[in-house]
Image 1 (cartoon, rainbow, N blue to C red):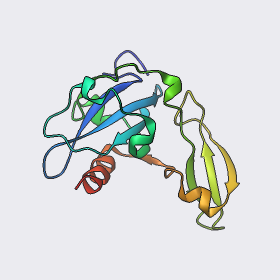
Image 2 (cartoon, helix red, strand yellow):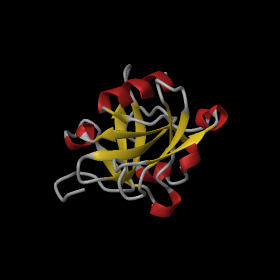
Image 3 (cartoon, rainbow, N blue to C red):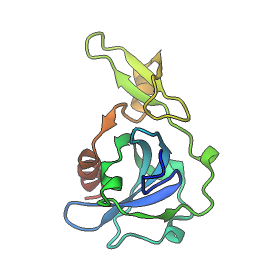
Image 4 (tube, helix red, strand yellow):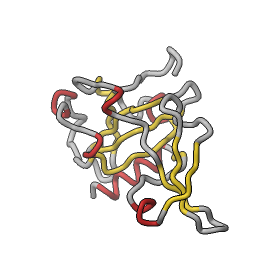
Length: 154
């Protein structure tokens, strides 16, 4: 994460939704290559909210946890609204993700470095029940996130 990016870990940002209003995300981790691990929350706001209105939000409140490219943030299409009050990195861990191998059908828990959401992950075979409880692995574009949030907050 270089000095040229308009965000840092702990920043809240607004995501414009289809049909109007905004969702809110949190930068949990970011690397120098523009990959961000974010938590996204389940309220639709008419305007980007004040960070103080989100002071009580926690990781368990997320409706979507995803790694994504930072283009929406860099272009200003996802405006940063400020730091989460009381942000503490250790309260927002880099989550494990789930992936199913297309050829074998095996279920995997995918664990990235706590410092880089795009580093080579560690993969461990798991049960389908554990897989079902994990966020989906994979790097998303910002437009995918907007569509997914718009559907989830419809």
